[in-house]
Length: 214
Length: 214
DNA sequence: CGTCGACGACCAGAACTCGCGTTGGGTCCA
DNA sequence: TGGACCCAACGCGAGTTCTGGTCGTCGACG
Image (cartoon, rainbow over all chains, first blue to last red; front, side):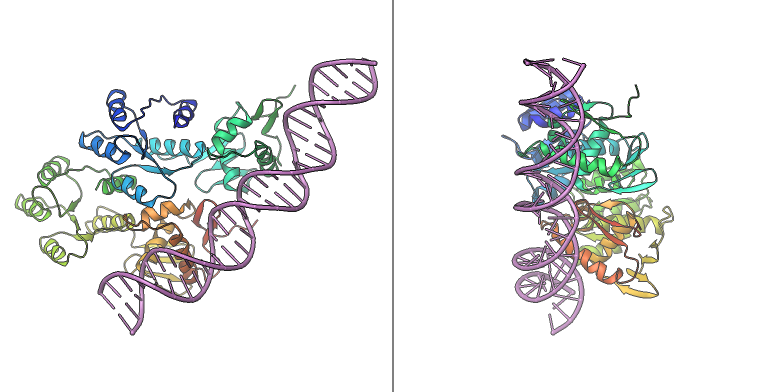
């Protein structure tokens, strides 16, 4: 899961990694992280054992578990042992990042800024709707994740393959043209108003920004 | 039972924990909590002994007991010893939180109302009935917890896995489709009237809100 | 300076997948 | 025995992906 580290570094987090359970315990002791992302499947100790030893040592660190898809048993064991959240594979990076932010927010006890804004566009993360010009805009799950990704990277240009990596499940092996299709859907829903916020940067990708006039 | 601490922290309570009976007595003396959640099974002293020593020391703190499944004997002992309530394992987070609020309400530290309302729907948390359009609606325990969870999160979208975590017992290992079944039951009972209050947000979860007119 | 070809982007519509609602039936207690 | 709970299965339709035609842009070349 190099992917996880890469994605979180890209988000600006300071990330350390370990390949084994014992390695993780070492790194956690040395690195003193604000939170831990832990795969249940590890070569030596499993994720649960790592959590158990952590709490036995009196370490109090929030844990996000990565579990096999739909494995209710893993989920329960994780939550019972004190994991703060879990995520079934395959997940999308957008979702991983959202959960990590949610955990950090929760542990800092400042209540969650449940909306993302750019210009006059608002994305409500509590209802999964967008708002623009006093209109409520319903989004499908993929549209929502894409818009969230664009807004988190406002003003930056993101390539189609970056988008695929972050918004789609990591095991998606289809064609990059879906991105174009979804950009088209989003434009119909949110760029029906002026000014347009989703811009094509030909040959590079897309960018959410205000139009430059010149 | 890290789960208990995690759930209550998430609800906004300030929580301290101990792993043993003696540890608990120490922490209670130092922390001076408004109430105590106490497992009957502890490595050294059992829960009853902890309560006995507390009252011997003149400490008056409300106690919620966690007992083994179906152990009527434990329940009786707990209550006669001055516990304020008990909860058999496995319990659901919703129930734990409700009991904690109930105890705090009784001791006047909490201001939780005994009825939840949304639009013309009323949920009486004392009688476990719902009221709508002058009709009394009886609910099964699971229906009640589900409705309560939806009403506590009114207008927000809650996912099926959030619902499972809060409404179902923590050792439930079935799949999320039970949630759909219970939503269906609830709709038959309370959304038989207009307007519908339980809404599906496809791909995200469910939300209790008034219908929006586009 | 104008034309042409190539490539990227856009988007409508078809095809397919999968999430959700509902129902009937089985199981486990009290 | 009845009620509460959970599961399995089916069908519908929303959501997602793919296909292919068209348009716009840019560089090359006459």
